[in-house]
Length: 264
Image 1: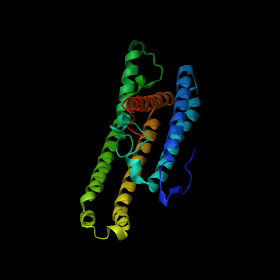
Image 2: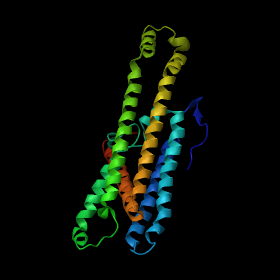
Image 3: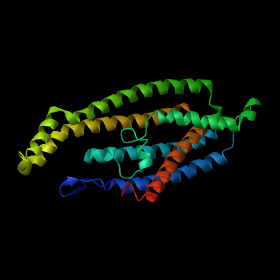
Image 4: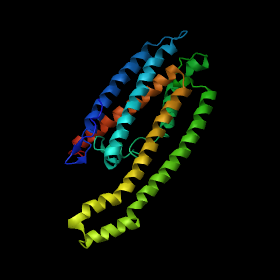
């Protein structure tokens, strides 16, 4: 499902179209999760068997890319809605970083899943038997992951600082002057709306650029983690990512419903 072009309401762009898009996207993510689970359960160690998993891995990555393409288009319509989405739960909102998941979370997810899988197969590993999942990640892979994590955290920090600077502009001279004029009812009835929009425009552009950079880092981090992992390991990582996303969304929406609906 792609977003309709140039959708407006009363001459102003609106974002109602992203909510149904997100719901369809997350349903498809669940379908891919089932495919990933089936592939991991039916996997048989053997020559070239792992490479057969590549098409599915690529489909899942393309699904993430599809999400971010539509998100970028929607951000150009209404950046403020993308930073405060009404299609996520309040539980999910608590973990948001600039309108999405924090890129460094990918490494915590990887280490957590690897640790859990290592525990379940420890005796096999002692005997030199491996099944190729994240529990058998090699020292050389861990070194590459560690290097990538350091790079990601540095860039994440830069983007966080950029976001802080954009947020500080809420109190720059142009905003303070405009808020004072409105208080004094000067120009509010005649061109107050135009003044607000012209004052907010550069702020909106700054937020758009910051969100785009954050989303780019999210997608690049996902792709680079997958590049480090073997095909079967990548399948297990994508399973863990989808499970966490889907369950957090599910738990959060249920809690909001029980509390009277936080996002209506």
